[in-house]
Length: 156
Image 1 (cartoon, rainbow, N blue to C red):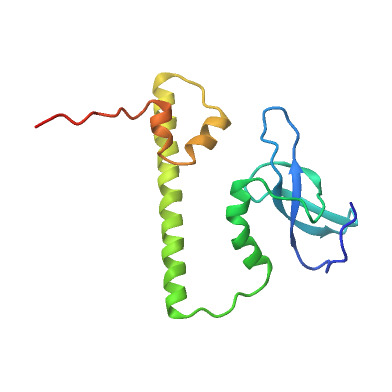
Image 2 (tube, rainbow, N blue to C red):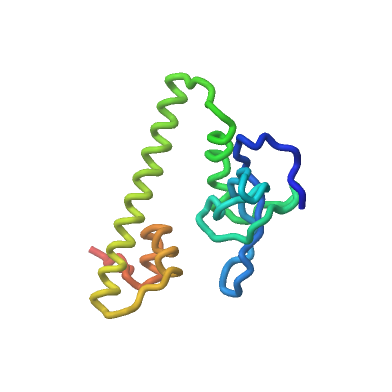
């Protein structure tokens, strides 16, 4: 597909297809595209969710099916759109709260992955990339992994 006329000094958020490997999800993703002077064409890196994708853009009408890319889209659109407008004090507080919660969740997920790796090491189990991706979703995976046992309430 030929890319629409674009400013070669800017970067753009574009829809891209899956890598096409059998064990990988076949979602449509978002990636940042920029002009490459060596290739004299538009190229992109991995999807904004971190997945590796096939090189080349999909048509403008392609629907993004990757939930992680959709969740990250507003941040990328804001960043790629240039300087954000000035915030009011209330908007700044809301943004600080949102970022604080995102940071807390990220730190919690990293700590959880560390604990899961420690457990796997103690048990002599190999760790796969797929497991780490699941663990990065956070501690809710503990029940699925059998690391948390529900204790029924007992009458007092």
